[in-house]
Image (cartoon, rainbow, N blue to C red; front, side):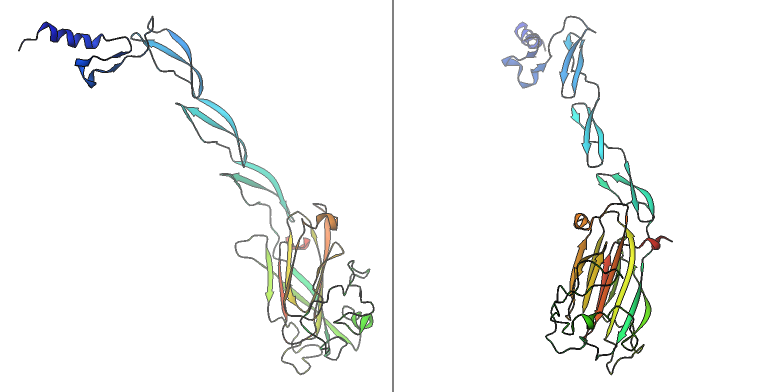
Length: 338
């Protein structure tokens, strides 16, 4: 079939409609051709700008090509420190931070912790073994002053002892001259933590703390029926358990920062850290709870990271019918590393 000159001109005209875009009414939608910006000489280049920065465009077949920008590394910051993100092909990548390490330590020595995927991991310093509280328990008869006394039970009797531990490392009575739960005053209280023939008998007792599952460096002791001297020393005084005793323990630790000490129990509980009273749960009462965050008490207690401090705990079970002794702590004594 032969083509007329007008048909040929329409087709040829579609190819010559302009240097950048050819569009004639008779050509239809398919004849729109993007030819780009004309350039004077093949292989010639010129500077250009793209999303990732400066680059060059090359002349090819009479038209300027796309702007070619080399990959660029851009500094960035994340939770783990400094890194880089790469801009390539007009797209900015994610911040890539190398695995970072920093020094850390435990009471048992130095270590390191690594930051991966924006999170600092656990310190790999050697951890202490679960500590043992070496205690002294003193047994009393139920007739001892302020034990099984006839006064309103289940109440906190705060302020029974002074806020600074005594020279012999026992609590100093602060009643003036008595307190609600110690009507016998100083004379009755002074024998609680001192061996007194005919008044009390004493024995040693070790409280072995355990490591909390899934919490390295956290330790606990829990006993909601805490009767460590049943049928011992003075005996049970006709009760099912021996309810009338006191307990004291003394240890030392190195302050590293972040330590906590939590106690729950009945009856009386006093805890001293760096010789200062930090928990005061005096009185005959049902279970009560108290917590100490050493970082929050740092200024008051005068704590310095890396220095060694004392921890002294005093407990009294002097009224039926329950006895609870619960400790949760991240404080470990310096001897737990051996």
